[in-house]
Image 1 (cartoon, rainbow, N blue to C red):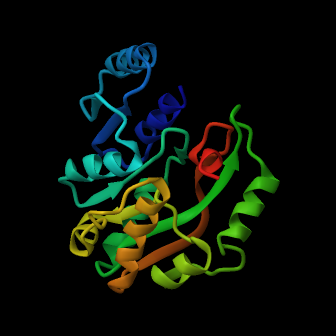
Image 2: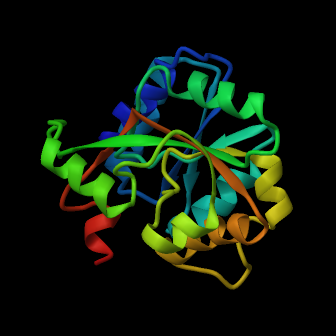
Length: 216
């Protein structure tokens, strides 16, 4: 299960004061049993496992996860992605330095189903999403979002109060990409700003079953 690797990358963070909410979206019984056994074996009180009785898709998962957020910051990590060890510490530092910034985004690398990094895939992703040549600093959320989908939902470090202020997502907004885009659009429409760091601090796994592939 890719989710095991994703969980391990959060546990390996240099910033340790986290709460990890794992929400399984009505997987097959054997997958659920394997995941539950893995979490139990870790025996880490920071991890909560929730088993959804039906497929609530990304829209439902997003509302569920944010509804459980009582912390100052909120990060969604897809089960096939990973964080580098210094990610949370770095993101926290930049948002603590400027309380007006709504979120933090860093550059990802692209890797495949076997975990092998793809330099060409990484370069393509960065170019396609308007990252090539962009300098570090505070940027508006809206314009880069409309130009190139600059900020993804997976791995972006959000200030929870900014998401609450923006209303999170429109009630009628459903579906995977509409949900992700709408969350960022609402932040951008309200003048939300992001801190962009052109440093590789997370990884996106591209494989045949990924939403990035199946939604096309």
